[in-house]
Amino acid sequence: MTPTTKPFDRLLLTGAAGTLGRVLRPRLLGHCERLRLSDRAELGTAAPGEELQPAALEDRAAVLALLEGVDAVVHLGGVSTEAAFDPILQANIVGLFNLYEAARHHGVRRIVFASSNHVVGYYRQNEVIDSHAPPRPDTLYGVSKAFGENLSRMYWDRYGIQTVCLRIGSATSAPLNRRMLASWLSHDDLERLVVAALTAPCAGHTVIFGTSDNATRWWDNRRAMHIGYRPQDSAEPWRAAIEAADPRPDPQDPALTWQGGVFVKLGPYET
Image 1 (cartoon, rainbow, N blue to C red):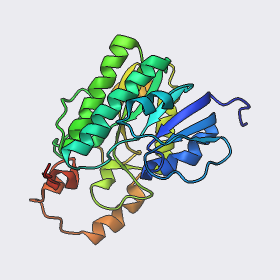
Image 2 (cartoon, rainbow, N blue to C red; image 1 turned 180 degrees about the vertical axis):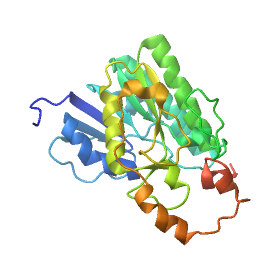
Image 3 (cartoon, one colour; image 1 turned 45 degrees about the vertical axis):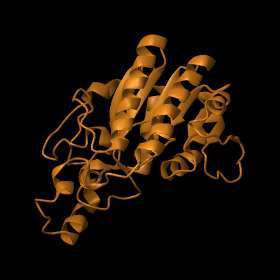
Image 4 (cartoon, rainbow, N blue to C red; image 1 turned 90 degrees about the horizontal axis):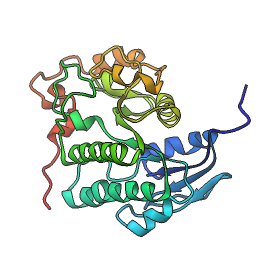
């Protein structure tokens, strides 16, 4: 039976023009009366129930206005892959500080922060780790996400802003390679994860790995069971085809050694 009252009046989705933003945009409308969408890129035309409010995260005044009247935030905005340090600094570090300051100013009590598995990319693929494993980022991008996890922790301890940090794996429509047999997150499970993070009664500050119910597992989410995320999809139906397409992987390839995959081979970038 469909509930008559949605859990949120107004949600904010940043990074709404990005790959995952476009996936979540129509799905989050089912969980709020109004969905405010933001990005620095083109957002298209507003659907019923949507509000378009473009903003650059490094623009403190624009971000302050962006969070006015918001109940909770799903923060996907920022640089989403490895790049030179300056754009990462502005969007992922300065921009995230602006977001949390705006949340503090307006009394926003819940943020779902799109962190990344690349915070821990330099653990080996034959290891299983949980959220208490020390960060070992594989890129400047991973470093910026580790910063975000620490910043959000301080805003929880100091100001009581609850954050669920999603260390998103490989969120695609289907797994594409051997690494994704462990890291894959289906789009339906992405929605389940975000909604659980938004609605968990007592989130506090939680780090949770974003994967589906895959048979190959590098990441242990038992410390985040209170969030209530229960994945329902699995990469297993694609295993045979993926392994047949690449029957003799190079054991010396760093992308097959480290959990960060090809990210350990990206950069460095000139500043």
